[in-house]
Amino acid sequence: MSDLQAGGDGLRKDPVLRIEAVGTACVIMLGGELDLYNAEQVRTALANACAASPERVVVDLSEVEFIDSTALGVLIEARTKLENPRGFFLAAPALETRRALQISGLDRHFSVLDTVPEALVAKV
Image 1 (cartoon, rainbow, N blue to C red):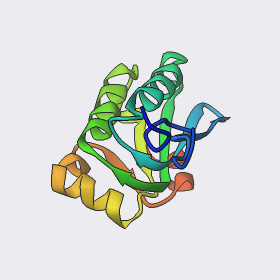
Image 2: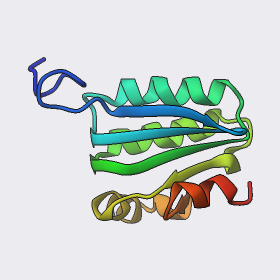
Image 3: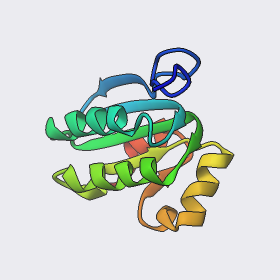
Protein backbone atom coordinates (compact mmCIF):
# COMPACT_ATOMS: atom_id res chain seq x y z
CA MET A 1 0.00 0.00 0.00
CA SER A 2 1.47 3.38 -0.94
CA ASP A 3 1.70 6.35 1.41
CA LEU A 4 -1.18 7.90 -0.49
CA GLN A 5 -3.41 4.99 0.46
CA ALA A 6 -2.37 4.39 4.05
CA GLY A 7 -4.90 6.08 6.35
CA GLY A 8 -3.17 8.65 8.52
CA ASP A 9 0.22 8.05 6.87
CA GLY A 10 1.70 10.24 4.19
CA LEU A 11 -0.64 12.62 2.43
CA ARG A 12 -3.98 11.16 3.55
CA LYS A 13 -5.65 12.41 6.69
CA ASP A 14 -6.65 10.02 9.45
CA PRO A 15 -10.37 9.48 8.77
CA VAL A 16 -11.31 9.57 12.48
CA LEU A 17 -10.48 13.06 13.71
CA ARG A 18 -12.14 13.00 17.12
CA ILE A 19 -14.43 10.91 19.32
CA GLU A 20 -16.06 12.50 22.33
CA ALA A 21 -18.86 11.86 24.78
CA VAL A 22 -21.38 14.69 24.99
CA GLY A 23 -23.89 13.85 27.70
CA THR A 24 -25.53 10.57 26.66
CA ALA A 25 -24.29 10.93 23.06
CA CYS A 26 -21.14 9.88 21.28
CA VAL A 27 -19.91 12.34 18.64
CA ILE A 28 -17.50 11.01 16.03
CA MET A 29 -15.86 13.54 13.73
CA LEU A 30 -14.73 12.07 10.44
CA GLY A 31 -12.61 13.85 7.86
CA GLY A 32 -10.72 13.73 4.61
CA GLU A 33 -11.50 11.05 2.07
CA LEU A 34 -13.62 8.13 3.31
CA ASP A 35 -13.17 5.18 1.00
CA LEU A 36 -12.12 1.57 0.60
CA TYR A 37 -8.62 2.27 1.92
CA ASN A 38 -9.68 3.55 5.33
CA ALA A 39 -13.15 2.04 5.70
CA GLU A 40 -11.89 -0.41 8.33
CA GLN A 41 -10.67 2.44 10.59
CA VAL A 42 -14.06 4.14 10.31
CA ARG A 43 -15.88 0.82 10.86
CA THR A 44 -13.89 0.12 14.02
CA ALA A 45 -14.46 3.61 15.48
CA LEU A 46 -18.19 3.47 14.79
CA ALA A 47 -18.53 -0.09 16.11
CA ASN A 48 -16.75 0.86 19.33
CA ALA A 49 -19.01 3.90 19.74
CA CYS A 50 -22.16 1.85 19.20
CA ALA A 51 -20.97 -0.96 21.48
CA ALA A 52 -20.99 1.47 24.40
CA SER A 53 -24.80 1.79 23.88
CA PRO A 54 -25.06 5.58 23.89
CA GLU A 55 -28.51 7.14 23.54
CA ARG A 56 -27.34 8.58 20.23
CA VAL A 57 -24.37 8.50 17.90
CA VAL A 58 -23.70 11.67 15.94
CA VAL A 59 -21.35 11.35 12.98
CA ASP A 60 -19.91 14.79 12.23
CA LEU A 61 -19.21 14.88 8.49
CA SER A 62 -18.19 18.56 8.30
CA GLU A 63 -14.54 17.75 7.50
CA VAL A 64 -15.27 14.96 4.98
CA GLU A 65 -14.06 15.89 1.50
CA PHE A 66 -15.09 12.69 -0.32
CA ILE A 67 -17.12 9.60 0.53
CA ASP A 68 -17.45 6.48 -1.62
CA SER A 69 -19.92 3.61 -1.60
CA THR A 70 -17.73 1.53 0.72
CA ALA A 71 -17.79 4.24 3.38
CA LEU A 72 -21.53 4.76 2.89
CA GLY A 73 -21.93 1.04 3.54
CA VAL A 74 -19.93 1.41 6.76
CA LEU A 75 -22.40 4.06 7.95
CA ILE A 76 -25.34 1.75 7.20
CA GLU A 77 -23.64 -1.12 9.02
CA ALA A 78 -22.89 1.05 12.07
CA ARG A 79 -26.49 2.19 12.36
CA THR A 80 -27.66 -1.45 12.52
CA LYS A 81 -25.33 -2.06 15.49
CA LEU A 82 -26.91 0.68 17.58
CA GLU A 83 -29.52 -0.53 20.04
CA ASN A 84 -31.95 2.14 18.76
CA PRO A 85 -31.10 2.86 15.07
CA ARG A 86 -33.17 6.07 15.26
CA GLY A 87 -30.42 7.41 17.54
CA PHE A 88 -27.90 7.41 14.68
CA PHE A 89 -27.46 10.88 13.15
CA LEU A 90 -25.33 12.29 10.37
CA ALA A 91 -24.46 15.95 10.89
CA ALA A 92 -23.05 18.82 8.85
CA PRO A 93 -22.28 17.10 5.54
CA ALA A 94 -20.56 19.38 3.03
CA LEU A 95 -21.95 19.71 -0.48
CA GLU A 96 -20.13 16.70 -2.00
CA THR A 97 -21.01 14.42 0.91
CA ARG A 98 -24.61 15.58 0.88
CA ARG A 99 -24.73 14.91 -2.88
CA ALA A 100 -23.42 11.35 -2.34
CA LEU A 101 -26.13 10.76 0.27
CA GLN A 102 -28.79 12.08 -2.11
CA ILE A 103 -27.60 10.17 -5.18
CA SER A 104 -27.46 6.92 -3.19
CA GLY A 105 -30.89 7.59 -1.67
CA LEU A 106 -29.45 7.26 1.82
CA ASP A 107 -30.58 10.76 2.78
CA ARG A 108 -34.08 9.24 3.01
CA HIS A 109 -32.92 6.50 5.39
CA PHE A 110 -30.62 8.47 7.71
CA SER A 111 -31.42 11.42 9.93
CA VAL A 112 -29.22 14.08 8.29
CA LEU A 113 -29.00 17.39 10.15
CA ASP A 114 -27.19 20.60 9.31
CA THR A 115 -25.20 20.88 12.55
CA VAL A 116 -23.92 18.73 15.40
CA PRO A 117 -25.86 20.77 17.99
CA GLU A 118 -29.09 20.05 16.07
CA ALA A 119 -28.26 16.33 16.05
CA LEU A 120 -27.58 16.40 19.79
CA VAL A 121 -31.10 17.62 20.55
CA ALA A 122 -33.07 15.94 17.74
CA LYS A 123 -35.81 13.53 18.75
CA VAL A 124 -34.59 9.92 18.99
